[in-house]
Length: 147
Image (cartoon, rainbow, N blue to C red; front, side):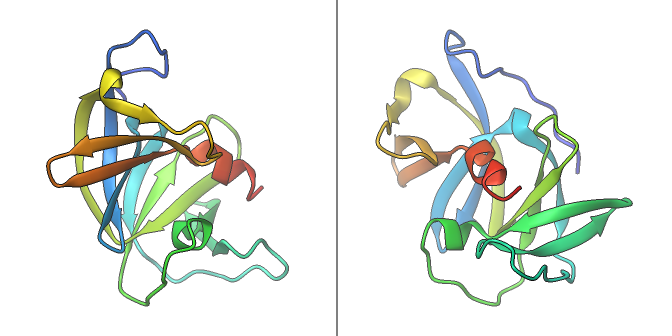
């Protein structure tokens, strides 16, 4: 599944398009422009002495892709349920993917709806919705920490 970015990270842009996904029932999102594709979970090869949140690597179209478990990063309870892998395109030669429980949808919200989280390295902001908060995270910070 390929996804196209519609908005940029330019703070003057009023609307922000994101991919919503779930971890342990909580809604999270990342900017759509950071996503390359979404794939089904496949067996991973563990890498000795890697960071605890790096759960392994996989071969995705002849590219080694480092797979991160954001549940470890966010200190959430882990389970062995089948998950999807969100593959990121950060413009570098390295490719990263995140294991997520569910992929919900692509949605748009206004930047003015975001409550900035300046005290967190990984959380960019919170979006208050009728069904709870959506946590907007910065994959670049987490993925750079995995390199």
